[in-house]
Length: 169
Image: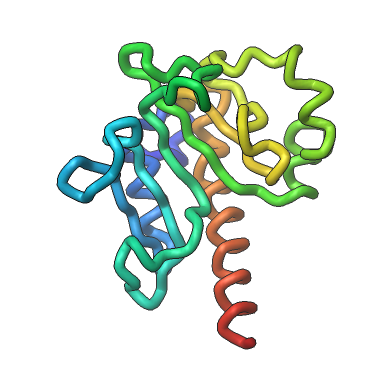
């Protein structure tokens, strides 16, 4: 079963990571106690464009994340602490955000009260980073799993372009 299989009803965290690793220069870091991460992020996964193989402490901001924990006082609206629930977060840029959701990232604040951030298998604005053009999907399934590879490729391309712009300076 792959994310591109039309009969796929869901895509797992492991499958999302496998799709991301097919893209060149991707590094995957899963936060853990051994890695020195705070307990609130243990199990969360960070996908970064890292063609130079820099250690995690020197890597740039990720282009996508998989979150498995609520963080009290910061990020609880998705209720990912439910058994088996995870949230894929992807940086898509302003134009694609508008195309996908029908409003600009700047309009997120006015629209947030009408959004159920805990809904499964729906493309949603990120509850905290929508203004920075991030979208999210809780447990991608029948309605959204097919879009995951394209979203990851888009975010990867954006991260790659940023990397080369910085390198050219």
